[in-house]
Image (tube, rainbow, N blue to C red):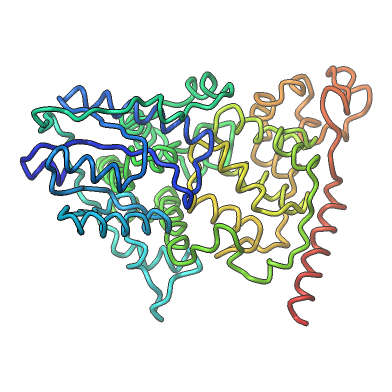
Amino acid sequence: MAAIETGRPVIPLYIQTEAPSSRRQGAASRWWLHHSLESLSKDLNAIGGKLIMRVGDPASVLATMCKSTRADAVYVSKGYEPQMDAQDLSLANQMGQVGIHWKSFPGHLLWEPETIRNKSGKPFQVFTPFWKSASQSLKPITPLPVPTHWPAPVVWPKSDSLSKCNYLPSTHWDQGFSTVWAPGEQGAHENLKRFAGQKFDSYQVERDFPAIEGTSRLSAHLHFGEITPNQILHECLQVGVQAGKSSLSVIQSTFMREIGWREFAHHLLIHFPSTTERPLRPEFESFPWRKDSEMLAAWQKGQTGYPIVDAGMRELWATGWMHNRVRMIVGSFLVKHLLMDWKEGERWFWNTLVDADLANNTMGWQWIAGCGADAAPYFRIFNPITQSEKFAGNGNYVRRWIPELKDLADAHLHAPWKASASTLEEAGIILGKSYPNPVVNHMIARETALDAYQRMRSTKKK
């Protein structure tokens, strides 16, 4: 919008690069990006604009584009990952050397990560004081209107094709994801209006039950910049105030607190960039993680024998998304039942989540592994059976993603190996064939994990 307000021609430019120093996006995210760019292109065309795409080195592409169009300024939205920040700084310097103004604008976060500090002037490492400090200054900004006319150049520069970016994966995802998601700004705002108008009030209760569509499902839209946290806050405040709520109650709501967790994740990533590869708590460098390709594959494919875990992993593979409660359950199972390194889970989520976000993914996995900021203690081990009974008790979620268990009664659905042979036979289930036996015994795995934790602590004291 700042570029449009200059009154001069504006050329929307997207550069696809695979810089050696950057982390390649996962397959599911690349699917989303393809369709998001496709949607953006259509939106721009509708108001007289055009999305120009180029594949190549950003500095070379920008220099060539500015020279050929006689542009004297580049307008960008600020990135909030260490590598993106470094790239922007490098590009700004290179553009400056040839007389091109580099204008960077915030917007993807509510606060700049560098601005939130504790009383000692250091970065927060615990969420509650972070949110208490940050939310005191939380004031929504009225979103800018959508442009109705694009200030186009006399001649549009040549564009590469979207297909040249090679974003679409060679898996079933193109068909499976399209039935669930609508990437793009329109889909983002439709989701927001649905959630703010119908689900915001019940979010605190319904968000923990995976069979209920009680969450906003805005995470991928947020990650790809199709909607901003400020737009979400503004919409929720408008709907809330119209319903007689105070602005403070909306800001302090459970849902806005979850938006705060996203902010906290970026805060941590900027201040502790090494956490993408190393635990924030250094003692976990010596944790005795296991390496077992067969166990890892069972977890990835939803074949662990624990229905709630398998349902979550199959939902992830089919839709590119997983309910947050189930993310915690499957994460705990990987690092504490199977004793697999949290980075194995982070890598799998990175490749299979449409909302894969470096900050959120890193913080989430370190949280569940007990090795990050404000982390769940390592000795807090989710029991997949009781978690399933509590949050998926009616069986709808498990039956949806594990159809081979659909005829098993609720009383046995969450731990089918405990059912009698006649009960299993009646439901058409042969454990070890139609559905796997548990890959580990919960109680034994729990004790093994606690023992490993104690050995790590003993090593630290020496």
